[in-house]
Each structure stands twice: as C-alpha cells, then as structure tokens.
Image (cartoon, rainbow, N blue to C red; front, side, top):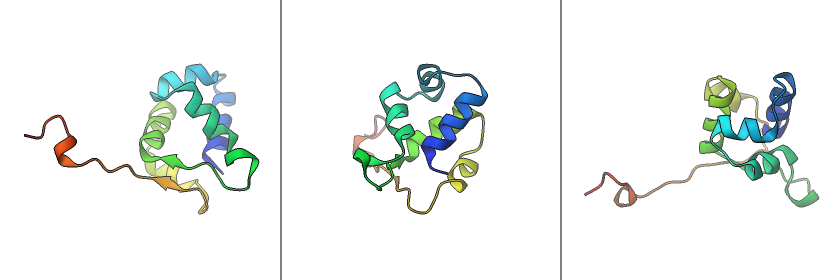
Amino acid sequence: MYIGDIIKTFRKEHQLSQEAFAAKAGLTVEEINTLESNFQNSSSTPVPVAIRQIKGIAQAMEQPMPLIMSQLPSNQQVMVNVVAESDQPHAK
C-alpha cells in the first residue's frame, strides 16, 4: 500500500477531510493531496515521503511509525532530511 492509500483509507474510515487530517498530522493540505496522488506527474514513479511526514501521519492515526512504514512498498522512496548540528537552535 502506498502512503496515499493508507491516508485515504484512514480518512474515509474516520470521515475526515484532507484539511482535518492535515491539521491532525501537522502537515499542509497540499502535502496530503500530493501524497494521496501516489505517483509523480502521472508517471509510474511513486511520490516520495519524508520521515517527518510519516511521523505526522502516524501521530494523526495514533499508530506507531514502524507500523506505518512496514506497510509501504519497497519502491516508495522514504526521504531523510539531515540538518547540521550548527543549524540547530540549541547549538552554540
């Protein structure tokens, strides 16, 4: 199941709009819409999903992140954004 399918299924089961789900997940409606499309620009390449997005989705669904991640197919790219320590607000 692609991440978009997971989101759509959950939203339908819980009668949530994209707006309501996005608010619960701490994501934008545009992000949810893009993820729900499943594929990039009408191609067969799945939309990549960021770890921070999976975290928000898991939070909105009240599920552990590993459970959500275990449902993703092997061809769905998961992105990790690394921030340098010097870019962190607490760094001196």
